[in-house]
Structure formats: C-alpha cells, structure tokens
Length: 253
Image (cartoon, rainbow, N blue to C red; front, side):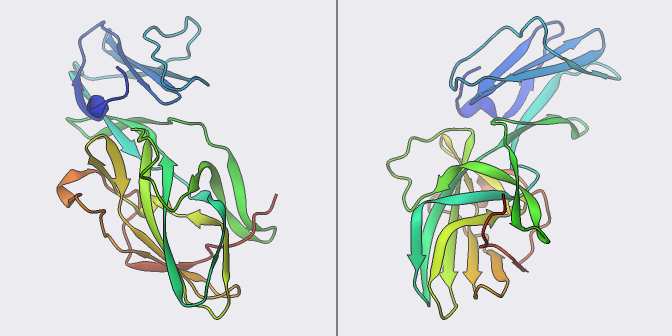
C-alpha cells in the first residue's frame, strides 16, 4: 500500500496472504501462515517506491501465535532516544525574545495485535545514526536527525512519515543565544493526525544561560485546527509539566 491516509490503524489479515506496506524508505511485509505471524522489512534508498514482493533472502521474524491473528495495527511512534536537530541556518535570538520554529521528525512504525495490545516490533522508517550530545564527561546518547528546524512549513510538501513539531524557543538570559542545534526530547510528545499530516503538541524551550540548564515545557498546545480527538499515539514517557536539562550545547565528535 502506498503513502496515504489509510496507512495507520487496523487492517485485516487473511491466512497465507501477504500484507505489504511501503512508506518512506521502509518496505514492510506481514504474513499469517501455519499459526505463525511473519514480519520482514528492508530499507530502500529510493523513497516513495512501492515494492510488493519481498526479496528472496529476506530475514523474517516469526511469532508462534495462539489462535488465528485476524487483525494487526500500524501505529506511528517517535524514536526511542532524543534527536539532535540543527537549525536551517544559524540564528541569533536576542535577550528576552522568542521565536517559533518547526522540526519535521522521522517516525518509527509500531506493529501491534489490537485484541491484546501486544507490541510485536518497532521499525524506523528512516535509519538513524547515533551521536553524542555534550562533552566527553557529560552528555547523552541521541539520534542525529537529518531534518532541520525551519521558521515556516507553508512551502514544504507534507510527508506522512514525518511529524511536524512546533517548538517555541525563549531566551531569558542576558546574552544572545546562537541557535545552531539543540537536543529535542521527542519521547514526551504525542502524535496527532490532521488530514494527511502528522503533528506533535508544542514544546517550549526556555534558555537561561550557557552555564544553566534550560527549562523544557510540554505545553500541550496544539496547532490551530487540531484537537485532542485526533491523537494517534500517546507519548513514550509520562508527560511532565517541565524538566530542567541541557538543551543547547556543542556536539562532541
């Protein structure tokens, strides 16, 4: 099945009949056969190309099931680590001012058995490389995001495997904030579907100076026209009102 609004949600499995999904760089096959559930996938460098038949040498993952599996559910989820996001271009944010930016984050696909809510597998749509955010003695493991934070999304074509994430950055320090990259903790965000696009709720980052932690606030605010009823996926971690953490810092290679 190609990239469309019907990617997410429940779908019926027929015994011995292959179910295929192509989205972004990911091609996924699901088969229920002889009381086993088979799942296989590959990543292809060419986006937006549908491949209906799996390769002959595909490595399948198999689950022995009790009873027939009639339905599976495909759910979009954020990656399981924070992402390092770069600005589209270097910005200086003056003291006591704020800007709105948008990041388009790649998602993973979670395959679930609806009747038991059992999670079979999570697969990234775009393979992500890992990076260290911080200095040699202090920091955390993250994924490196290939997308960039932008001031405006109006001229960008929507893609169903990218989540539009609104971010409000406030500079409460007495110096200019040079905004080049930041650590984005997506595991505390939900995913909403609006028309043919995925959206996250707003994150506010309050910069308080180079030597101080930033305050990261999950405001829960949704873009205009989106409601809580359009929620597809709960956050990986329980949403906190705010947390203090290092957010703007140079990368250590």
